[in-house]
Amino acid sequence: KPDAANSALFAPAVIALLDLKNKDEAALIKAMHSKTRYNLKRAQQSDLKIDLGVGKKAQDDFERLLKTTAMRAGFKTHAAAHYRRVLAAFGERATIVTASHHGVALAAVLIVFFGPRATYVHGGSSRDQSFLMAPYLTQWSAIKEAQRRGCIFYDFGGATTDPQGAWAGLTRFKIRFGATLIENKGVYEWVLRPRRLKLFQQLKKLRAVLKL
Figure 1 (tube, one colour):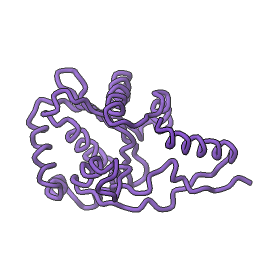
Figure 2 (cartoon, helix red, strand yellow; figure 1 turned 90 degrees about the horizontal axis):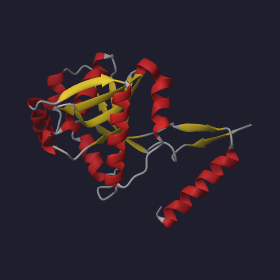
Figure 3 (cartoon, helix red, strand yellow; figure 1 turned 180 degrees about the vertical axis):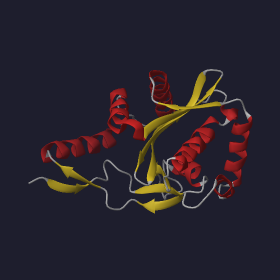
């Protein structure tokens, strides 16, 4: 019989969750940090173009921006095929939100809609023309799409309670949209191949020691 193991290796212990229940756009904007409201207004007043879809260009732009962000921030990503499988598996319940300026994608996020929750899976942005604040407009557009689909929560994904941690800056970005930090309880994986999981855990520890 397979073992049920806590999947802390695969899911964050803390998430940033935005409650959308009974809130219109004005209420959501009012709940934002003043800096986020300011940056969002700047983005809205620019000539950024927002597109929602999972076509080839959207996927290519998302993967390029994610790689750019990963290299800049020093984290690892999955292979491009992983994200394409996610989009294929969720079908119409997933989309990519892209902000472009004169045809050049500057920020993109992959969102999955399931039940009452929209989840920000991954995203990336370019530092080119950062004054346009494209990441703010992509997240805001994703939040509005979540509301349009009837979701009552927008899950910004992993966060940290450590103000000095590696995710501190990213966490500030998320909670300033009005999100609350929540302990991610009850997330488990049903382990079908315990030996492979054990090997994965050992390799992860080794990578941390060697700082690969």
